[in-house]
Image 1 (cartoon, chains in turn cyan, green):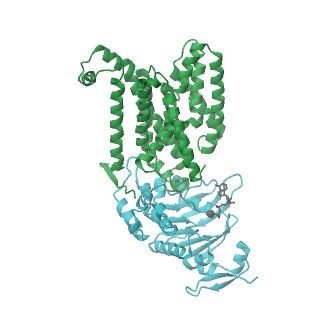
Image 2: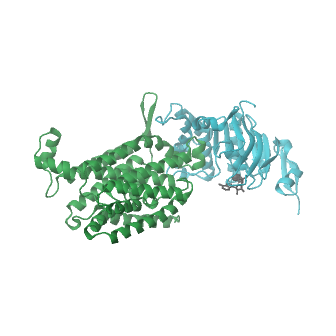
Image 3: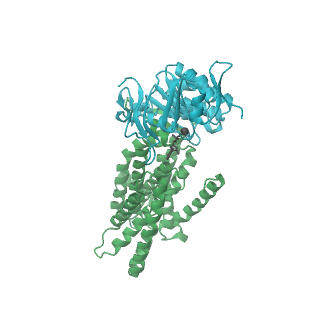
Amino acid sequence: MTYNLLAARGLTVGYGATPVIHDLDFDVPQGRFTAIVGPNGCGKSTLVKSLARVLATEPGMVTLDGKHVQAYRPRRLAQRVALLPQHPTVPEGVTVRGLVARGRYPYHGALRQWSPQDTPAIDQALNDTGLTELADMPVAALSGGQRQRAWLAMVLAQQTDYVLLDEPTSFLDIAHQVDVLRLCRNISNQGRTVVAVLHDLNQAARYADDLVVMRDGAIVAHGRSDTTLTSSLVSDVFGLDSMIGVDPCSGTPMVVPVAD
Amino acid sequence: MTQQQTKVFTIGETIAVLYQRRHVVLWTILAALILVLGIVTLVAGKLGIGMGDIIALFGGESSPTATFVLENLRGPRLLVAILAGAAFGLSGALFQTVTRNPLGSPDVLGLAAGAGAGVAVVSLFPTGLPTPIGALAGAGVAIGLVAIATGSGFTSPSRVILAGIAVAAMATAITQFVVTATLRDEASRLAAYLVGSLNARDLGHAGLICLALLIALPLLIVLNPRLQLMELGDELATSLGGKATTTRTWAIVASLMLAAMAVAVAGPIAFIALMSPHAARMLTRSTGPNLVTSALVGAVLLVLADLSVQQLPVLDGLPVGIITAGFGGIFLGYLLLREFRKGHA
Ligand SMILES: Nc1ncnc2c1ncn2[C@@H]1O[C@H](COP(=O)(O)OP(=O)(O)O)[C@@H](O)[C@H]1O
Ligand SMILES: [Mg+2]
């Protein structure tokens, strides 16, 4: 077993009798920004939730540093792996700082609701997401883009090695999508591992280091984002006839549907 | 804008509690209100203890009548009102937080109906088992049935509520049967219990509910921060190490235990559990479980309601449950309207 690694082995998870994901192996590439792409309902959310132990995984397992994640104390694991789910709930009336502060829970104890590192960690997270000025605003009063940054600040305040993000760019306009993707890059440049479920293949290819392509609960391709996308893969996975062009800015692959 | 400055209170390395100054001010005001209402309860009316005697109580020397009234009539009744009110308030706050249902309270579980049925059944035995035992047993059976009927314990709020409605209907049927089948005077005593009354409480009742609160206390201290996390949704709470499912189960267990004990000593007093958390949220203007505020508000409401049935001539002698049901009904109507407006219900 490889150490110092978040990995899935023989992962089988689902919500009822039939598993969504069957016998899946996945080593999360360390210190890199990995994008998970695939059609709706193929199990992307299920995979990231399993990696963060939000879903129980039997049979098969998720290991961190070679140790079954179930063997970690919940808070201890939450100091290593953070997950921003697809639809988190904003508590009514909470301020940006109040929301970000919830990311510090893993560092607290049964009778200790505060640790001395909280304030610097929260300030740092607010600063990294450009929210320092808005810290005392109610989250409900923020724009969609600002709110997403507030959620990202919350998982940053968690100060984990692994940051898992489920569709962090969905429902944002293009400028704010790019904003979030740049933030993901910055986080991974700080040496943290970022795994994000993304929908836009071109954005995934341009901003992520690695690409994981899923279909029907299985990983069908995994590699560097500039070499993994091919038109036969896009046709296989999404059932779309396309050509692969070149992004004029970054030189990364760009999927263009063929003329109909 | 609500600027809520959070402060930290630390004792050594192991204890650090977050609080907001306005909450502490609010708690002090509510506690003072309970004290004032409590004193009024003791001194007001025909059998009222004189103010002098109240002061003397703390010194030790007081008249025998005053001592009798305090120890046997109004004192235990007041204590039960305070403690049962607090238990109802806590119970509702826990329940609403984990079911994310602003209209939820242990009443929807058929707990109160079960307690009523328990008391009714016990009254059939000539040996005269104590009423609280019947209430507790009835509440226990009702909760047990709900837990079995859902097939998943208390983990799924919607199933719990559906099963609760069914169990409540069965319990009410049993109660109706006993009420129609028993002798007239027994039936009217039963009727008073079934709406909730604080008449003729003794220190045993007060001790019972006090014990329940003491048992719940450590659990609540551990649950409180986790309940705050639950507001972020189960998935995020779990990924932060907050164990959403376990937290929900324990919060419901604590909620039911408190409600069952409160119902056992005070009868199924309606709506305190439902109203207190809402009033608490309005007062603190913050979300979260608001456990302390809900407990204090519950105590204020029940003491105030009981004081009014003791002293207001129009309400003379009515069981306190009728008052809380009256005001609670109006409040429930207001909540429903508000939810309709928001488009939730
Ligand atoms: N809570 C759930 N209960 C039952 N089925 C679910 C649940 N969540 C997801 N599913 C099903 O599992 C499959 C994979 O879902 P998901 O992992 O959310 O896909 P993706 O994130 O790739 O869109 C879908 O068919 C979906 O309907
Ligand atoms: Mg998804």
